[in-house]
Length: 377
Image (cartoon, rainbow, N blue to C red):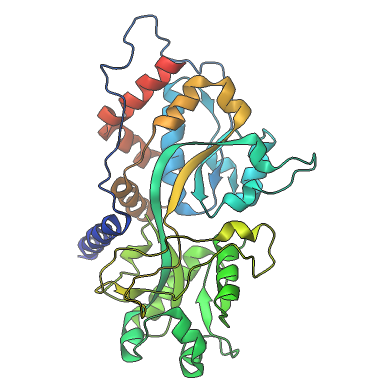
C-alpha cells in the first residue's frame, strides 16, 4: 500500500513537473541509419584511455553519473568509479579546471556559473579551462520552497515574504525558539545555500537558513508537515523528495514576490551570477500558493542540468565529446530512478544495477548515442 501511494504521488508530481517545465521528454538522437555502419568503424575508440569522473555530493545525481560511466565504458574507456570522488561544486570545478577530473554530469546552470568565475592561482578563471557539453536535462531542475499545506491555509499564507514580514507568522516558523524563523536550506558548498543567502538579502528576509545533511532535513521537514506543524524547506525535482513532501497533499509550493537580480546584495564572491530570471512556473493553484500578482513565482530559474568537462579532455577525445553531447536524459526516467534508488541501501552496486537496467531498457536510445560517438572517434 505504501509503495502504491508513493507511486501515485510521484505520477502526480511528474505531471505537475512536466507542465511547469513545458517538457514532453522528447529527445533527439542520431538515427541508426545516419551513423556510419562501415566495418572500419572503431567500436572501442576509448580503448587504453583512462578517464576520471566525479559525482556531486547530492544523491539525486548518482544515477545519471552511473549511466554516463556505463556508456563511456561501452566505448572502451577505462572510467574511474564516480563515488570515489564525491564533491561539492567548488572543488569539482576547480579540480576539473586543473585536469584532475575529466568531467562530471551534475552541473546546475545558472546556479553554478559563479564557480566558473573563480580565480585560479595562475591568474586565469576556472571557466577558462572548462567546456559545457550537451543538453543532459535542459530546464530540468525545477527548484523552489515548500511549506506545510495546513499551516498555510489556516493562516492565509501565500508567499515567503508574507511570513518574514509578519512577526506572528515569523514566530510560527521559529522551530528552534531563537527568535528568528527557520528555513531548511542547503548544505554548505552546494551553491543553493549561497543563492538563498542572496535572496534573503535582496528580499529583506529576516530568516535563519538551517544547514545540515539534506536527507536529515527532509526527514525532519516531512515529520513536521505530516503533523501539520509549520515548516519551510528548499527542494527540487527530479527527485524522490516530492514523494514524501507532496505538493497539494501535505505541502504546497510557495511563491515569492520578487526576482533575484545581479546586484550582489550579500557581498558573496561572484554572487552577481546568482540572478534567477524567469522564476515563475506553470503550476496550478492546487499545488502552488500564488502571489498577489496571480503567479506561481518559485523564485528560481529552472536549471539546465548539464555536463561540464575539462576542455583539453574534450579536445583530445572526440568520441567521448560526442557521447557527452548526444545524451539527453528523460526527466520522468530520472525521477523514477531516484525513487527506485531511494528504496535501496544506496550502495554503488545498487545504483549501478538501476543504471544497467535503464541502459538495457532504452537500447534504442543509447545505441544511437553510442553509434554517433563511435563515428566521431
